[in-house]
Image 1 (tube, rainbow over the protein chains, first blue to last red):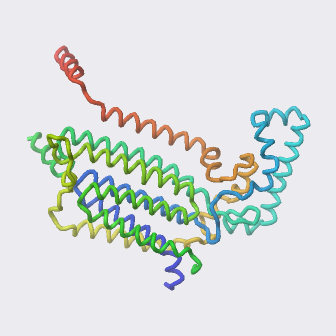
Image 2 (image 1 turned 30 degrees about the vertical axis):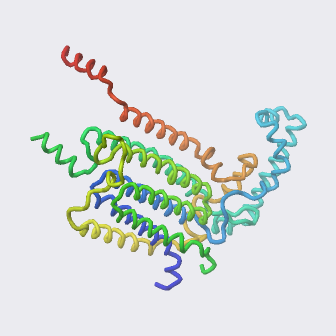
Image 3 (image 1 turned 60 degrees about the horizontal axis):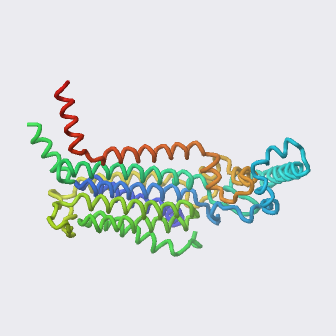
Length: 183
Length: 203
């Protein structure tokens, strides 16, 4: 294992350390709120793991620069938003412009793919000479963050309910009360 | 590798320190605040890792809403209720551990070692030839431009269009969670209790 290898893997190790800290909070504590805090820390570490995997060296955020030559027609396209498809079918003057433009754009896109060819398939998402970081982990983690807050809210509501019923949020005291009422 | 952003180093050190502090601190109020700091530091790192959308969401949801929800829960679950309604910081002390934390530490260390061993097979950080960068074919980034009529943000394009059904499902999850929270926290009025008792008596 060389220093080079270690530098390439350090981000995973940091994330694993954070994850294990969250895991420790979950399994060592008896307090219900502390457990949820631990779960949250674990969850955030998972987000970080995914985001680090998507990063490309020398890449930039997946927001395409200057609309890629599409911007000159952008305002026009926007004005006619809904009629876009209709216009193409009618073959009106404006419609043909749009079609021309679409064809142009499509062939241009294919050009980019063809010229970059093999290189593009093996060096991440490249568009007009700019290298972009992978957007897919970002998308997945956006969904995960929002679902995470939903589950956290549900867990916290359950804790409030438990506190109303048992008068405590310490797990061992709750179990003791349960055992007493059973016997 | 050496041209990496040097601001990353203090952020990662602070992340680790914050996580350990959350694990050690016994006052829940302070722990919740440290969780907010942790989320915010995580969001800063995400910004450096070229994921501004996730960074915004994490700062707003992880450091914002989540902290507010936890503080609200804490204010509803003090150790004891005071007559005057004022809460003191020792109402939010976690009970000290009765036994030594040896077993949890052992489990965590073993799991951590196994995971670190697993990273030896992982592609290096930022490697453009990593499987995640090659599959699925990243040409969808270039195609999203004409597909979305010039929308520059690829994350938005994927989230709202290519994976639109997934986002719809996500909305359903939030809706379900919201309804569940309302049902769990609904207060039974004495009237409700009386009616339930009557029904029990009838059946």
